[in-house]
Image (cartoon, rainbow, N blue to C red):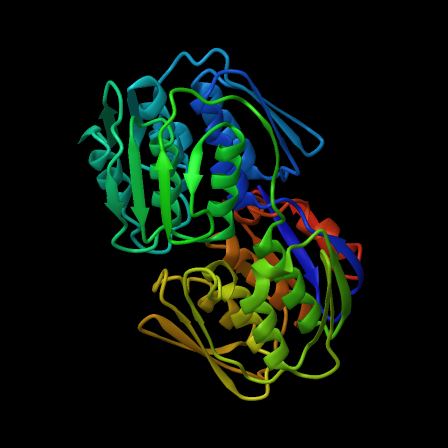
Length: 420
């Protein structure tokens, strides 16, 4: 198991190339189950979640091979319709294989998923959507069983905007017989990216980028080559890191439109941002203003960037409120920031960060992926050295985070540890 040693007090200055989106990759990868042949996913990030999902697909008979940042997926020889607990327990996105398997093969057996531990996230919308399309669903022994000789198109309304359920039901509907109307569909960039890939495979989808999708099912799809969108959460993390260190950083290969809410909040905090094409330059020369955030479905402020914002507000002139309406209990990082000297109070669905407290290095522990990032950012501005344990959480969603930050002035060292 690895840990980070972070030396505080170093200003960031330079350029960083943003990786492909982890969350988009996990939505695109199971499309290979919808058609036989060889798929190529360019700009795929090399991180733990991609490898975990590759192993899951491998257990179904897919050959997965990552060459540089091109992921090859050969789905010619699918020989299993069961996604076992040993793979699925590691991340919630594993449930994305459910829709494609039942749509193409008429059957699926998928373990109930695991992943980051910040409150209950039921899969009922996934199952209700598939049932509406005609799947017979049962749960036994911790596994979801789904079967249907041929799914049938139907109208389905998502009671809440759910990225995961939108992804799963959309992939099922493209092979269902007849017409499907999906309403209150999530419009996160990762969902839109999936819809566009499905169209390139031969699917008929109208309304891409809106909350209503009209889908006419087809009898078969074809393998394609597709480019993964930039990672908006990684980009947000780097922007906040630059602002915290009063740095001057330019991000390359980024989609600014996916970051509108983050950019707006950074500007309110006093940062200067220059957006040109697929680059964003951020400069910061003073302590930030205290700025409240409330997470919301896209295009609102992303929940995956709220922990990083809380770390940023530790430096603010005044108090700020960080409220999460997506995952109300996602504040497990607060006690760890407090170990560094942070003054934070938690309440129901929110925390209040009181800026200006003196931060000093200490030993802290990661509890989930984005919490890990907040600890790295806080360590970069704390006095002395911060030891961050269990960075395997961070490795799930960031590719070579320490190398990218070190290249622009950070001092982060990865070491092996026996701590579990």
